[in-house]
Amino acid sequence: MLELDPRDELLCLRAAEPVAECSGMVLPAIAQASIFRKETMEELHRDLARENAASVYSRGTNPTVRVLERTLAELERGEVCKCFASGMGAIGATLFGLLKAGDHVLFVNDIYGPTLELARRLEDFGVSHDQVFTADIDAIGAALRNETRMVFMESPGSTLFQRIDVRAIAKLAREHGALSVIDNTVATPLLQKPIELGVDLAIHSCTKYIGGHSDAVGGALIGSAELIERVFYNAYMLMGAIMQPLEAFLFLRGLMTLPTRIRRHHEDALSLARYLDSRSDVARVFHPQLGGAGQADADGWRGHSGLFSFELAEGGFARAVAVANRLRLFGKAVSWGGAESLVLTGHKSDPMGKGGEGPRIPAGLLRLSIGFEGAHALIEDLDQALAL
Ligand SMILES: Cc1ncc(COP(=O)(O)O)c(C=O)c1O
Image 1 (cartoon, rainbow, N blue to C red):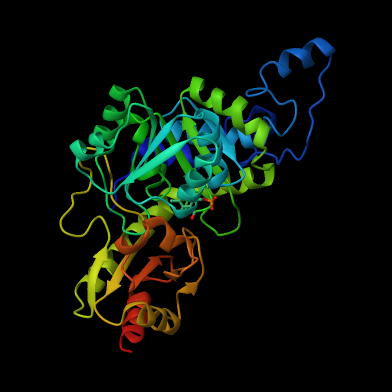
Image 2: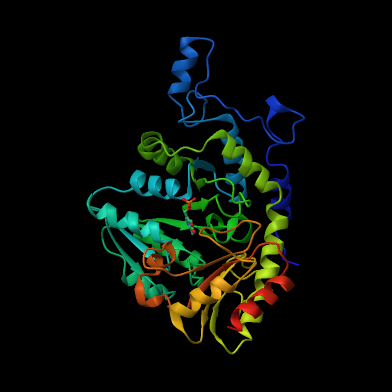
């Protein structure tokens, strides 16, 4: 069975417990308020000067959201967390809040498409970027420029799920005087702890596994108090991509079952990946645990979650679409991380295609998000769809 840190299991289950004002409730009250009254003007002035910690106005801090932020900070082993309206809200605020004209960002590995689109948009504001697709630390070092102020990585990367040496890249960035940032959504805070590896900031789309039920959109940024404060005042409060209290409640509820769900996603996805790998009509399976990669390795990586992709040996894009259409148990939808299995193929205007920038992404690629229908039933479904 997938081994998780026992401390994380308790943290997830008791995510909401420290809320004194709701003692006895298993989850916190949904603080559905835009403003918070104070006893005196002096108290209001005091709290206005620390809006990142005190509830004054819900565009800044909200009590329900703060419970989620405390738990996510602890799960990621970071000092402070700020939650956002979406994963892109967190990514956008990180880039806008910490970069200025003249700065350069180096993206390492496959990166979620809209993150790169945002980087392209930032070119108009004088922030340049490059992307490298190598795990070779010298090659990554060679791509750094004098003006590189941020190294932004994904590991496992979007779409092809290759892993890179997170610890070595964080060290490289630090020595260069750049911040290191990781989008840790695919690994979840349970399977990889980038901050323990020296990364400055970890980002999550809570929309995926943290929520786990395809019913809420949200994001999170975790790091030192100093960095989160900079993002809070430079971008979060000004851009307004805030998490709502109902969403925070749903994510706290999701956290309670995250370890159990991740074990199941992990196990069933690995079974399916092995099955697909054994088929002669499948050219390659992109799952970071195939090919003998160990469980807990030097980076403390505990294994993969439930998202992976595979390439058909023949037929390219047209056959990939036909196979996806024949699947009965896999919903045709974007996003991932819920209880239901999903399939996605590339498309001209699709997030999966753009992230990998052209020829790196094979035309006959199908991405699967493995839910809870059962590995046996899902294999049967793939069997009939691939018989086409
Ligand atoms: C790796 C990754 N990061 C970030 C995001 C963006 O998250 P959201 O849709 O919550 O804005 C996604 C969404 O698909 C993603 O796959």
